[in-house]
Length: 131
Image 1 (cartoon, rainbow, N blue to C red):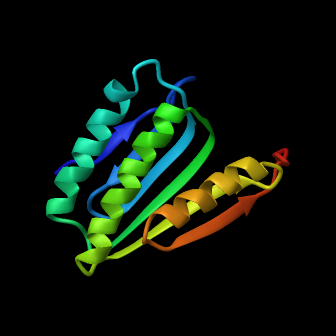
Image 2: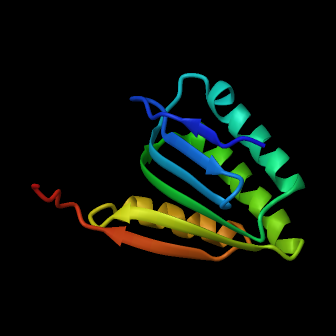
């Protein structure tokens, strides 16, 4: 099974799912014109991953914004993590959010309430450091 890698666009997040390490990363904005076209291959890839997962799976989500249709697909992905957990695999979601974005923090809390996998909330600064 190959890694799943999508570069970010103005409407879709970057996706970096690594079946060898068990680390899945979603980062950016998710407002695709056709959510099934974007999220369908991601959910299908994850279904294949479920057949032979690593012992520990970490899903890192760092979205600055997403629409309701993306929200639904993210929830589908999180429900799939329930299956892994129920089958004895270690699972964790890292929910990253900007310190000034209380809405995104609350959305993460809502997701954490809806699924049975541990969430770790990681706040980061709004400041961009000059190099």
